[in-house]
Length: 307
Image 1 (tube, one colour):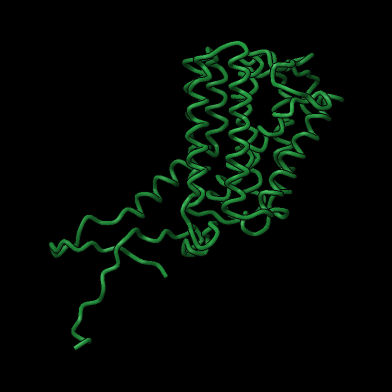
Image 2: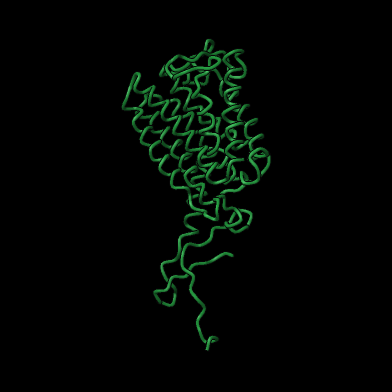
């Protein structure tokens, strides 16, 4: 009789649950019902990592070309991920806010000195428009998207999420500017006052990054749509990008680039988002890992399923 049959055993991974108690299906960003990360994003991330590993091993014009290539790869990765997981509206919003807004604020900064301080770009980073190398706004976009997703994964919507995303983006500059100034890619006319151990870069630069980061993250959510307020398994490449940027930057500055002060400042600043993200992802992985077997000794695997 059918009533004597044992209940079916469900196999697979436990369905993750969001911080607010909703099942992960409600947070799934993937299109077409697929919550797996798009394969292309993993491929681009792998190429990007290889390019960054090669940076300390090169010099001169080769290093400058590798810098440009890395920024382009990062840009394609972030915009491509936004498009593949959330659709054209989110991707267009990201480009408009981060790329368009990034170019506008950089052009304003070069022309007036506000909000970063008075500075000039060298000619080593490729073509310029209004005194700004065209790859610079691409760099804003590259890190803006993973910073937003990290904050979305960690805190609820509202002012705290915007603040965390802005800090998560701006703190990256504690690595970026010392590295680029050391290479001679740009310089400030007046670099005072500066943070201890980071000469050549005024404090106004970091405050300018934070100011624009707040503006950018405030505009991104309403323009990108509701899908930008949700995270899921398809966002793992962006989490990996953010954490790789953090840990590899600390290592590179401390060991390979001879910039121990920026290694320390960046490690402290970017840890505000990177460390909680790493801990949260590790805890989520442990919760989703299926048990090895049932307590009664059978070889059947029990997996909790959330509907």
